[in-house]
Image 1 (cartoon, one colour):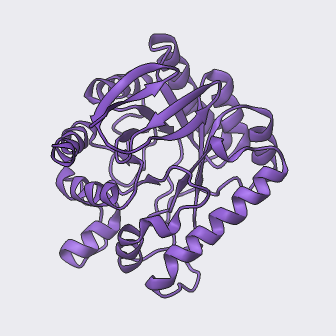
Image 2: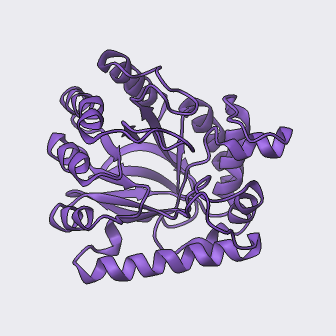
Amino acid sequence: MNRLPITFDGRAVGCYHTPMQSRQWQLRHHRLSIPPGGGIMGILNTTPDSFSDGGQHDSQPQALAHAEAMLAAGAHIIDIGGESTRPGATPTDIATEIRRTIPVIEALRQRHPEVLISIDTRHPEVAEAALNAGADIVNDITALEHPDMVKLCAERPCGIILMHHLPFDAPLPAPAHMPGLIRQFFEERLRTLADVGIAAERICLDPGIGFGKRAEHTVEIIRRLEDTRAGNRPILMALSRKRFIGQLLYGSPEPVPAPLPTVVLSLLSADHGADLHRVHDVAELRDALLLRQAVKSA
């Protein structure tokens, strides 16, 4: 059985046992090799109103300390966001979003030159400022809906995360149809972006858990995760503390801050094909993934 490292520009940043070939994701001028089920993206919200950790990291010293704690716990990527996207959240103006995120990116890049940094934004102005500050990845919940975001990403060699989304008030398809519809959405976006020079190897796919989907849709997405994959691209699952967990456990759609439910669902997602996991609780998921890989490779 091969012991395959997670590598960044040839440097090992983590290691899990796996018999399978890793997927490749091109980030800026480097290539990330991701063993199936193995990559962890740590969430760093610099907002006062995010649904589960609002206000905890909205100063630069707090944000930087939390980023470093997640790196020490085993995160491979730090995803920094300055606008809450929870249902009903007040939109954040661009200047405020830049003020919340860019100093943190600059400080993190200066102190940790090799860290992988993602900017979680739907605004091209924020994404451009973040890339200028040293970010490697643009994580856009609208899947590069804005023409200026497409233009920016075509010009800059960053990694890209495309998220599937439905309007919160849109009629929903039957759960059984959701995985196929997500795949069709990703296939269309990959074709459209290829036409403007954005290569598929730069793209990671996020099925958009919680964005226009009920709990029953999420269960079906996890169960049939491979049916959402397009172009053999890596899949990122963002399950952490989402409201559907409360719906499944307690019949009430509220965030569940305890790590265990997210860890369990992330392991199930890994078993069904997830490549990356966007989470708040990095250390708990790192240990769970290590144990999973130890059992699978025994």
